[in-house]
Length: 154
Image (cartoon, rainbow, N blue to C red; front, top):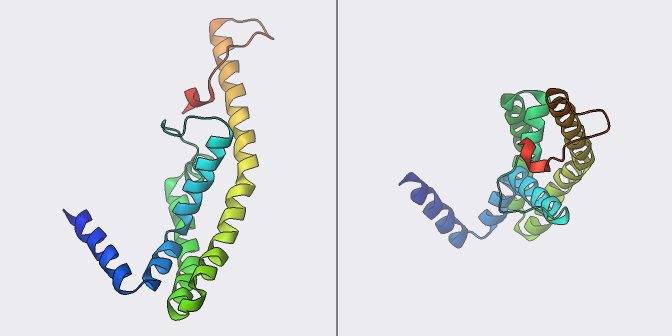
């Protein structure tokens, strides 16, 4: 299994060089921040966090931009021009490694939080459109809408 080899290399590297853990944490920043913000958002909304969903920022961006490739390119740009230099700095200055992780994650967290409002508004509009289509197809009079769960759209 290739995954076991990669995992073993990672664990071995971080044991021998604890600074590597900080560098790997920085390099995974986009995914860690997106997963954490999404999990917290779903907990605060009372959603079942263990159920499948499509509410990660990268999923929302892929739907909004109409392309997974565009989102992948955006993540690549963030990794190359922001997170990689931060990871290098954390490696070269071990005394500042923890602070570098916070510094690297801060704009990502702010961006993820800033998109929450837009994602919420987009989700509400999608639910309205689905209700309109369903009402049109079922012949329901105006003002009478069917109740749909938010997760029914994904």
